[in-house]
Amino acid sequence: MAEQGFGFIFSKMRAGETVLIEYTSVSSPEILLYVMEKYCKQYDVPMIIDDVADTLPEFLTRLELIGLSINEFSDIPVIKIGGHRSGGKVVGKVDIEKYSLDFQYYNPIYERVRPSKMVYNPVLGVYKLLLINSMREYGGSIRLLKNISKYVGNKTRIAFYFINRDVVQSKFPEFLSLFEEIATSVMQWERSSSTYKLKVTKSANNDILEKIATIEFEDIKRM
Image (tube, rainbow, N blue to C red; front, top):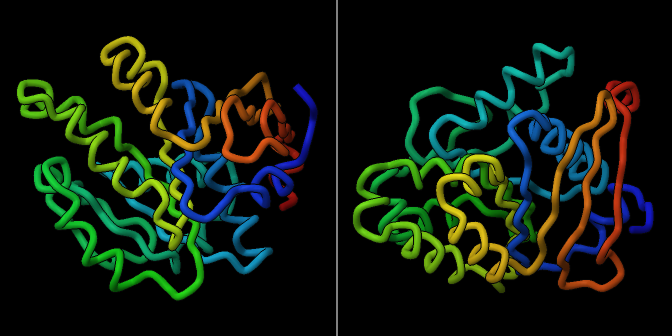
């Protein structure tokens, strides 16, 4: 795989994409969200965060504990799906069961808050929905993927679904395989000591296919 910077990879994403970001339990995905936010600020790209089951507050707490400023997240619109803890600028809430059943409850909030420009839309913690009993019992994982697939090609956004690969591979391997199929791009986020790496394993743009971006923690602190 060829080495490239994060800015190069992000700049090659296309409006309407659904991007699957697979991370491990120890790879600190909040770092990638932090880097993404810095990119969006630098290039004036709006961001809307979907926060499933309080995943964003968890991310922000960990960022703060390792010494990174989270102040700039306070003005980012956040759509909460379940959960009770605040993080960012909460602009709407959707019951977690309703979100699992049908995105019709989510869409009016998104349409109300999205700007005219295309947005980066990180979706954090969606895999947690698979752990809900009703989702497991009534084929909810397939329904969730069907709902997600309806948004593929929505040119108002680029959606980045952050998925804990360790959890999903061990408990719901078929979900991960199907998600990789419907996603337009698949990326893997890894950490080795203080080095963080993003690998593009599937892409709608051949310019970034098989590309790798790496960054050291000391460089992140200077962003």
